[in-house]
Image (cartoon, rainbow, N blue to C red):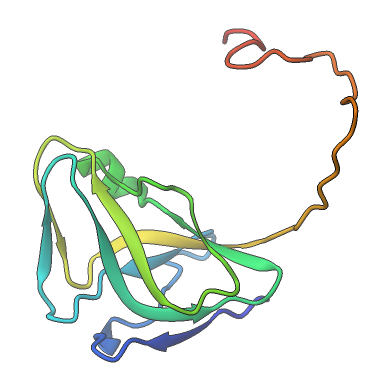
Length: 151
């Protein structure tokens, strides 16, 4: 079990609680909008904004937190995260905000306490980088962008 530690921002609504897994098999824990004024944010179609969670976190070395859209918001309202998955690095200690975008056709209001994203804790492998004269050959070769056939 990996432990991610949290602290609250000074003006945060602590009654909203920490991120939580909403089912026994959930991969992502839901994050909530936590506005210091307990208000709301109107996102017009095509607009995006940084939505505060009221949290700061400490991720263990060797892990990251990925921020991902909630499928229900994406399907029903076109609300997504434009940099999905967003990565929070283990050495970041600032406020945890979520960039939320309204890709839908109608205005969308983000209400205080609303579940706006999910966070997935994932292991990170840091690679060594090596410059070589040539790369090994494969059956696929340089084919890309649909080169493996049509379904």
